Image 1 (cartoon, rainbow, N blue to C red):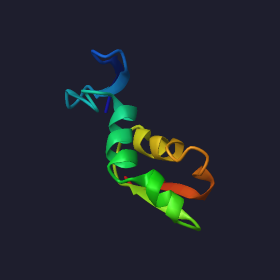
Image 2 (cartoon, rainbow, N blue to C red; image 1 turned 60 degrees about the horizontal axis):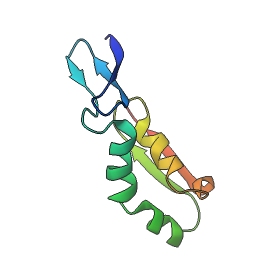
Image 3 (spheres, helix red, strand yellow; image 1 turned 180 degrees about the vertical axis):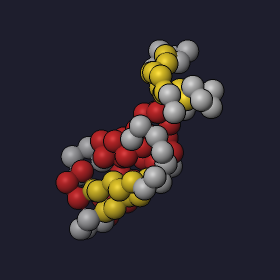
Image 4 (cartoon, helix red, strand yellow; image 1 turned 30 degrees about the vertical axis):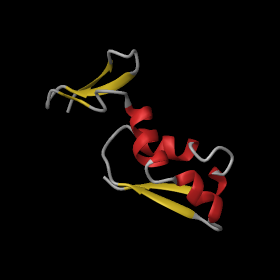
Length: 88
């Protein structure tokens, strides 16, 4: 499949599938969407603060790794015990 980088209306870049005529994360962009859905909605910061040992987060999407990278960046200093694993 062919993909291209596109600039959204808010100035953020995302990925577009030319074969499917689909732009991924079309409203706010991949990082803001991942922050809202993975970090905030799942209360990762709070959960990590109470957790000891390895914390594994599975991302089963087929994106450009924005979800996994945002989750790893999200804990702010606690990423040492976080591992993002992908399937896809």
